[in-house]
Image 1 (cartoon, rainbow, N blue to C red):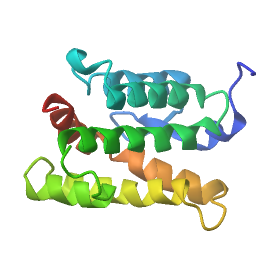
Image 2: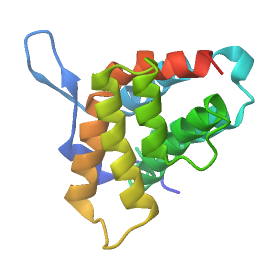
Image 3: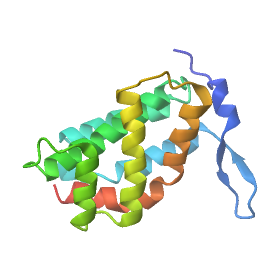
Image 4: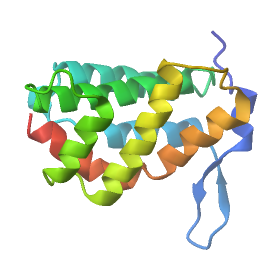
Length: 166
């Protein structure tokens, strides 16, 4: 695999400066995201299935700098990690759908309404990746992924709470 920037990343911003100017996307930006996500899982759960899936998602996310196609796989694994965490937490609800588990977490107060809404958007995207009816190509896929990643900070506390209650 090439250790050079996948040219598709040139179309994305790495954030904003304090005065609102765009920063370039970089490997360091992706790495920083991964480091933030590493803190979501308590050390005591590092060997659990959800944590192992999340670790693989983080690795693929960083490697997408070199092979952009890894980004979609990283996002899919990230949502599988979240679903796995819900299934560990709600172990008596084996037949409940991922969306049903998100709704239960919302009604149980584990997720705020805003977090649940964002995660439900992610569940729909995960379903499109897992059960495609048509090809998800190019900008549609990218736009959806970045809409989710853009709001990740709002979900981090809820996800951290879910992992710490396992």
